[in-house]
Image (tube, rainbow, N blue to C red):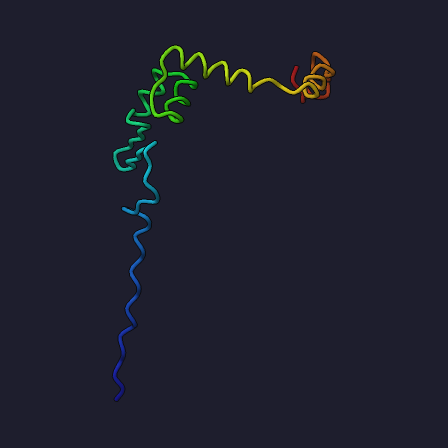
Length: 108
C-alpha cells in the first residue's frame, strides 16, 4: 500500500515594504499610517493653508521660512528666470488673438 504524501508547504506571501525605510531625509517625514506628511517640521496642511509657493520653495531649499527680504529676493529671482526667450515671444505675438473657428469643437 502506498503512503499519500502531503503537498509541499506553500511559501508565505511577502509583507511588501511595510517597515522598510527607503531613504532618510531631513526635508520630509511621511507617516502613512497616521496620514501625515511633514516638511522641515511643518505639517503639510499648515503649509497649504498659510504660506505661498515661494515661501514653501525657500523652506525646502534653505531649511527655514524666509523673512521679508529673503522672500523679496526669491520672488525677484523667480521672476527673472520666468522671462520667455525672444523667439518664443515672437511666436506668441504672431498668433491670432482668438483661436480659429475650427478649434471650438462644436461649442456655441
